[in-house]
Length: 201
Image 1 (cartoon, rainbow, N blue to C red):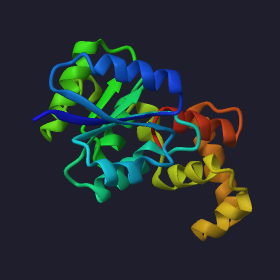
Image 2 (image 1 turned 180 degrees about the vertical axis):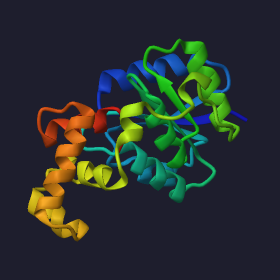
Image 3 (image 1 turned 60 degrees about the vertical axis):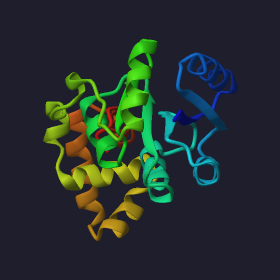
Image 4 (image 1 turned 90 degrees about the vertical axis):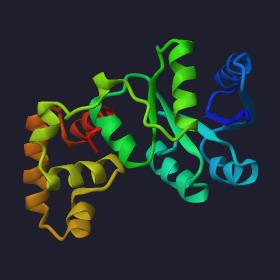
């Protein structure tokens, strides 16, 4: 049986190039190309692929949450994630979301083909160098600091964060300052950006 593949990216040219490349691999069948994350789950329900390949960084798309939704919609479907520079922390979060492979954008075709076959077989297929504890700065962040940074990424004000987490505004400011020092951010938004881009939130 062929491996039925749905590819998702928010750039049409990338999608077309990806599809043309994968179509050259014996046993691979591209059954769907999805521009952006909005219609991925509906496409999965309709086409019932063996694997979905998501591109990290699509505008307006939380790929880890999308992976969870795909798994809920079709548990038999494996999910692989393409990321520009995957960190250990991102890999940890991806695995928690049910993603079976995180593939660097600079990987060779042979790596991608092996990952697709592994994911289609239900196997965790990740470079061992990417598996392990996150960096010291990520480990230094407390649970509360991570919560505050996560809400900050979403644009929440100090008052809104305080209300959401049942903290005083002063406590939120103190914890934000602590996270800024640990991450060497210029302000709380810069610290939140650093943590998000490193996959620590």
